[in-house]
Length: 212
Image (cartoon, rainbow, N blue to C red):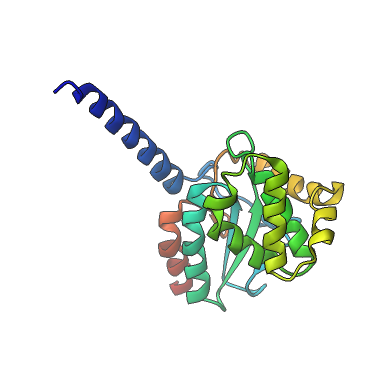
């Protein structure tokens, strides 16, 4: 077969891509050592769940990361199954070197947060990831982000005025700095009560804590 080398090469590339996604989904981007919970929660405003919950999940995430999109429904499932016993805290960690649109996406959620719409915008970005992540022109991309804000009832002009403000940028930088102190180098990075875990371990670990 004349095309056999080409076919084998294509299969090898495909296998490598699949392995990359699976690896990023399965492995945490932090050292596998427990972390002081206070360090994880410092200056972390995006919280869903009761303050006295038995389980606290902290996620450092990148809105343009495919593995983060895949992890999001798992985190939601756990939170919905145990609404009184689990709280979820989201922290930004956009990997701008490989995801050129991630930083602005994070900033967009911070604008939405000022209008009480952080989680709604968070969910919308993951749902529409394939659409906005491929936009290359900045003006077109920001316009797309503004259209998502409008869908959620946020004033478009006001959104556009704020998305690149120094204050909004600083909120994302705070999370990046916090992640850097923890030696995070990949997303998603998950902690359950201070213990770094992979997404595949999440349900089992949460249920173990709740049942003990």
